[in-house]
Image (cartoon, rainbow, N blue to C red; front, side, top):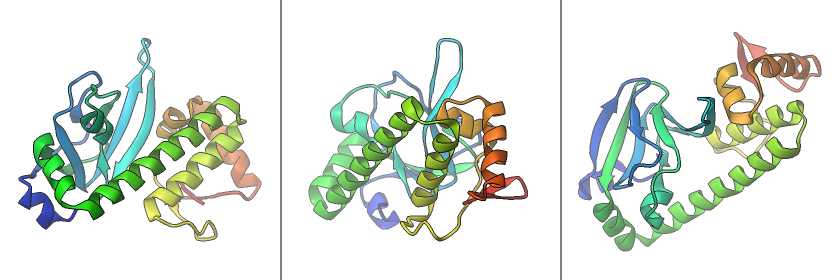
Length: 199
């Protein structure tokens, strides 16, 4: 989202995280802006029983964890590297200087946060009311749109989530995801390509 030159101007540093590394934890105070240069990061919450729910996944070029620095509340979820990742890290003070001095970036960030809120509302409604088939299709179509920036649902995208990750994002069991994917494939609503999903 924010160009490398601008990040460096406002004192951001590029840090490497190995797969599985925690970038920040739920309940910690928020003091930094984060943006992915390479890799992917999942935002997770865990139940008292240890069950994981994936709130969202950030990919190359995307930022994550901004609401707590903007509204001054602790992180509501934990950020974990899904793969080896390089992440820009900028102090809150520098981030506020950046958005004060660059209204176009401020506006773009507002739009991104509003879109995330809209998607989260849709996801919660789907989890609350939809059958497994619709939950899975809604998730796949949302990811297709987010990862490609593509609103043309006629174009096909390869979704590289594991069945476990899909379960963690829909509130379904892995076994239910496996059955549902097979059912949707049989109905012609998706295709499988080397165990990955094409929608």
